[in-house]
Length: 347
Image 1 (cartoon, one colour):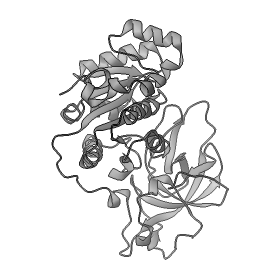
Image 2 (tube, rainbow, N blue to C red):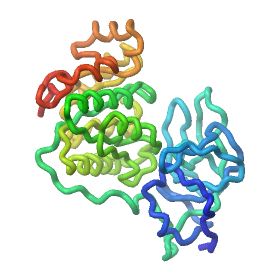
Image 3 (cartoon, rainbow, N blue to C red):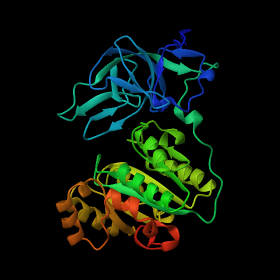
Image 4 (cartoon, rainbow, N blue to C red):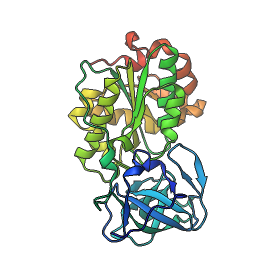
């Protein structure tokens, strides 16, 4: 271990927000990183990500030479970057503004080249052991019975409107007098979705970083299930009227597909709302969820920005298609006691 210390002016990313910085005592300058390891790095060259989201959500402007604290993780983002944890502590990239250090494999044509990083070393504790996000994960939840009514939002792909739909559901339930807890089970660490669900009225709001993951891409099936179990369990322990869960990316993404196929997901979820960017995606997505035996009760998402696409979906589907405004303005239909529309599929 090198006796280097973390500079006081180092910008700590969102993915590190559960880290207790008082436990950091040194920096390891050798070794192979693994997902979840915390790393001190310097910004070598500014590219796509010109700002870093800090622990409190503020987006700090990056300058070349800035010391930053980020987390090694994989990234799956068809609209941005595909990236993996590198094999060593050599130069790598800032693959996500929330604070993911990784080696980029591919990128969307609309993206600039990624911001380049020069890792200084892995953060370590007083014993010289490298620290990892899993060191600060939430403890195993206590068993809560019965489980609160749980609505799961899933979609066709990145940017299909999943979080907007989840926030609309939360807002409608909150206006109806329900207390709502919410969580994002999978994805890449960033605060935007958490802040949006919080602003819509959910409390508490958790995400997979609280389960010890900066990203769930390339996690094992058991690890993704662990995120579901920990986050849902902790929300349930607060005894909300309703829990709203979001699953990132789309049905074709490996971790999403694996999670939806599990018995644990069927046991947790009372209702599914599917978010899609167009009517065809909505039709195929509803069919895919039903093939898994999952109770789809409504469709929403980006397609509802188009009245024509909304009409197409309504003509083709036998479940309601809600615009965001309808989610806000239809509290009776999403109230747990109503057992209609969004909550019509009870266990």
